[in-house]
Image (tube, rainbow, N blue to C red; front, side):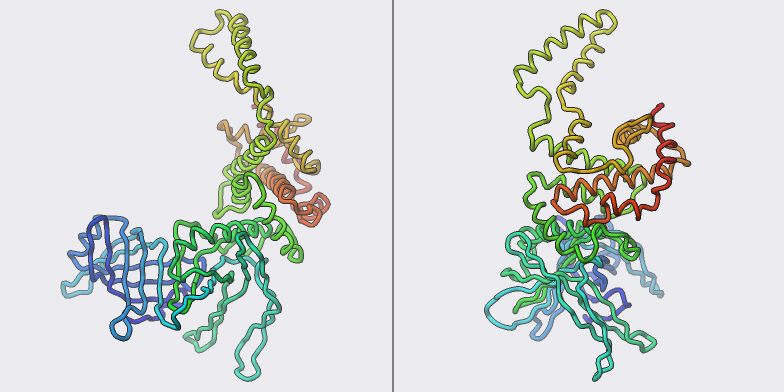
Length: 490
């Protein structure tokens, strides 16, 4: 049971595993555990069951997994545990001579790898290296140089970025480096971003950390995602105390691709303003009466996966509608007539009037369906609420695509209604829809920045800045006319 370096992307452990499903247990299953070197890659398991074992394993698609590597005195040195492993691929390997073993690949969720050691009796504080997906705005300033004595490439930190989070959590961003010799004899260095924190929690108490600490870290990284326009998440961690080292690979979480990070889209704020942006917006987020709508809006702006353009437009608008609804609730302005009894009497008169006006034009079923729509008459129009929101937070949108229909130009609201009710834009409207979606993004970014209390003039989405950097500025009028021909007349 030894560790071997399979390639530059994984460390591989060969073990004999125990897998469980409901009340059944299978022991001594040969397994290779692949632990990723990169922080956005996920671990995987390869099982090589015998004939009888393969038959049992092929009857389920999910099971728990555990294994261990023993050290001196046959005591566990490294242990592996995952509460759920999903089968992603199965097959068989023919070794010749009539020997044929199964081969099953599984993806472990919430994999825990515990390295046991003993450094003292008291637990003290546990140091956590949280693995953070790439975000250049969070990278600590560093200087690279050649060491005069060893000749190796070294890195000197100028200063680390430290932030105070909710519940007294201190988070410092740093880099961890890993050097490896290639097959050609060259030294190759890889690095990844970490968030460092210390907690009075045993390293093996993963469940407590996930419940009590991780949600606040996730919220802070979400604000970092907004400011950098790069989806940023904690993918797992290494926790070290004086009894053990626990590596935890997070499950049930969508990890962002590094492709967009490599492209490095223009962030909302400049690097010099980013620390202030994080502290200001994170504090405002914690105080917001309905911060769930802020989460949804940020996830719409910085999704964890690529989306088709219609899906993107609709998702962005839905996020904006949620913000408007929260604004209405906060100000108790959802209804035109607040008094329930007053509305009840008026509703009764409306029904009577409709019955007299329609007469025999409607049958009973049609009249009943019309009555069901009456309550909508008492809801404050979306347009009114949106205008009130912009006025309350002093949000200027005059330089962007009109939000509502204006001079026969379809507003973003009308485009949303067109798409929601099954409207389909032809292929030659793809670029105009992209431009409309860009403008909807700018609207949502400005709304969020204003709600979170950061000065708009210090961002790349301010009217004065956007005027000089927006790639499609000269094509907006043409795009508006093209889409309006289809939407306004539909």
